[in-house]
Image (tube, rainbow, N blue to C red):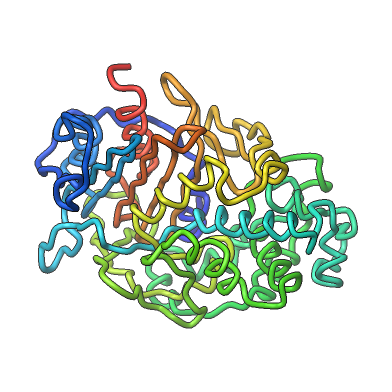
Length: 404
């Protein structure tokens, strides 16, 4: 992978499992801290997850890691490392962070709600909603459907793979360009300069451009901004008080948060930790610009998985999964409309992961939404591994398949 941007938004390409055995940080037990009634034995319910968090810091070299587990009525929060390398403040459950491609699940949910209301159809073409936007040699915008955008079978290439983008976001140049501002039309234009990856509906390839186009369609079909639609349809009804989509020129994280660090794509353990907390979210937009917390993400995915956000027909559409090619994504995964499944040692979990420079996030759970794990690390590397994905896979196996 040639750019930090590319590494971030294709964060789920790797899939090795980190074996975690040690920890130096004590867990925080949200059941007691929040005054909630947890199940008996709450303090001992998730030692495997806590061990993995500690391993990510002590061996993986990450600044900090957090996880929240929900299992029925029980809720547990664990942390290791620090939120801020300068002050040494530990990470806290109210800390907000950038969630990268998990944004796609919010966008897909909005699209499916609009479809349920008859405001668009999943079989509508891109040309119908965005005439001329994909008018370039080799493209067939009248054959690319909304559904194909959401499940990555459109053939529209990923703008983050562009060589010029790579030159700006690889190594030290990223520090100079992290505040560069992009419009959705510019992002699509970068992708459109390249030939399609394949004819519509004939292959599968993860592409952030698909969700930029989907976000543009949401705005055209609804008559309001994507941020307003996400807030009105998901954030407000679910009470996600720490979740929002930032404006394109809003480079900060509002509310309580730690710092987010990057190695700029370098793999050497001696690489300095660069603070990249402030950056332009515009290069991600509908494909990866949102901010949230582990608690809000678990609340969102619990509602999504158990069918509270979508009517049955649209729920079936979202969870109609496409097998991802072994050379294109993680082994043993499938992808639906903004959601994916991951096969663990003993079971399969559903959710979404995401990454952006300095922050990697993963939220997956049982198909009924009763058992969930949401986790985040505030660094975009993992010493001795292929990336924080190793840590996340280990956490999921530790919680859903203990002893396996």
